[in-house]
Amino acid sequence: MRAIWHALTMPTTHPEREQVAIRVKAAMEEQEITLNALADQTGIPASSLSRYLRALTSPTIDHLALIAEALSTPLADLMPASAA
Image (cartoon, rainbow, N blue to C red; front, side, top):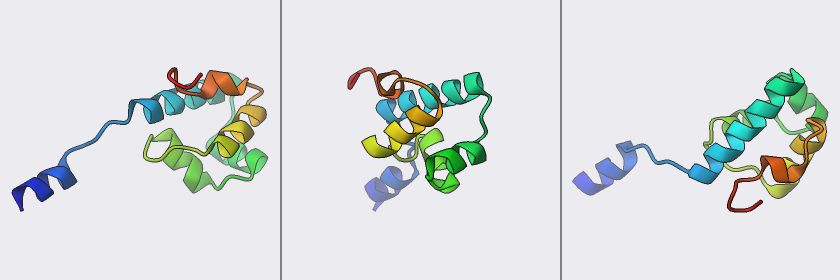
């Protein structure tokens, strides 16, 4: 039981998710675009974008391509270093 509780309460890191989040946030700041504006431009729900930006989930390649297009950023610039 202790192992299960430990697994549920310990934060887990996802370096690739975090890299994507950092890169998307930087592009958003550079373009001065808000989360809601990005959601409008991409058609991706703001709740999904928020999860991507907090590195809780990873965007699909299709979503990442939409985000890159909306931010006028090459797709490779938003991908994690291991995938780019």
